[in-house]
Image (cartoon, rainbow, N blue to C red):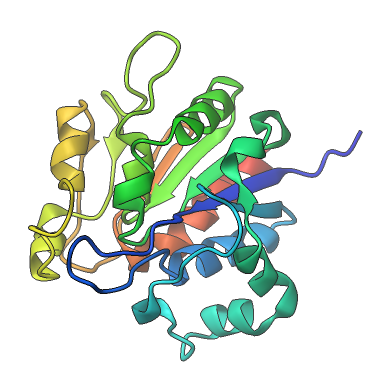
Length: 229
């Protein structure tokens, strides 16, 4: 039996930014940077989305001046993982020791209501695995409950895209809800850094990051948890 650890990165399938007519989707650095951090530590990484198939890219995130993004995007094998994502509904959480929910504004529409997001996250956590999310990715966590009926984030240190950052982005009224406020309503002990500054929270096997600048740190923290000992 293989002892290699395996992680799952989940991206959004939602491509419309509310009623603005503008495109959205997953945010490339929040996939590329955690992916790079995980594979550098010998961890195998699969990529899934809510609907499967080609995942929508937030065009503003195609930042190829960043060498990590550039390598991911221009390497056929990794690019194909985003163009042919596995449907989350078809995945067995027992295959993975970690799940990481990447951000992008699209997550705000399809992550919270997904029964598969809730199933995968709760199962991996209950099996002793790591649950992670970055930026808007913690939208995946707002409705995840453990078998006890308690929210996964309740009483836990959590970071996520702040309400202040949403306001600075001019999207407070576009979003279906505010992520920081909703996590706090679920009982999370939310913390943040200044606007756009890296901030990663590790609370046991729950790892969260505030914004795109936090993506590499989230990936590194997950890799450390999976490889320690």
